[in-house]
Length: 302
Image (cartoon, rainbow, N blue to C red; front, side, top):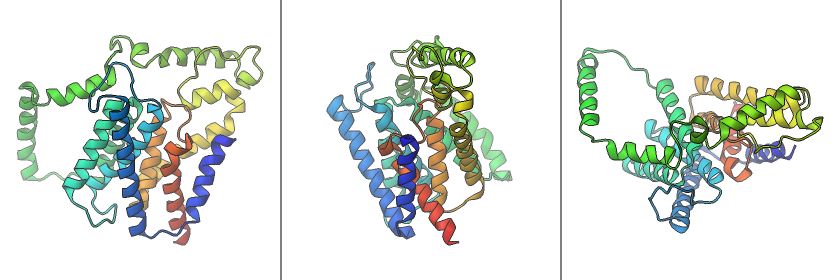
């Protein structure tokens, strides 16, 4: 229950604060800047700066990565919608600098779950927020942009950038082997399903032998292994509710506090690859539950 009590405590603390929009925006900017300082100091202390290594060099990368990932999502949304945060240094250069430094740090740390979650979240934001209307100018410009992009790829303009992403995701893994590419996760997933089929009601609680392999890095599978399909039902129902709550908020809410739903959505994507998310570790998920508290407080006022 401690897994749920920590985020619940963060939520309650957030609801009992009294930030206005400007103060909350300032808080978020400071959080992002300090997260960037932490990321940069980590890659320079444990590694060789902006160099992607075959072996993971930064300890606890799966805890540091989502902090940087949440910060990247907030900055990315702020770039796409300048009204999301109320801050006097609202220059595009400032925001782009923070965004690319954060993204570069995640690539060096090689936190692949956060990288995937960032891409999905920001693409979803683009699709959700931008309604592209067909005009004569856009119809004529479209083919030109497609041809220009193909030519740029053909002549290797983006090779350096693509190589960095490719190395961060696949270096020291066999790209032809899904189990290798997933760092052994798919094999453990298969073994977890076998274990669940044998112990469907209460999982390890009533099993003669506990699950003898590494922890399945997926929230639902991990709960099923621990408590079975029946025993874990309260956890799974609430977890599914969070998915519905997040997506519903994304589709309906348009304000500063819509950031809460986007950050929760990011964290839920990470939970597909990391079994403690979206609840913990508490430090990594602090901003998720803090922003949800701010949103709920504002909703209650209205």
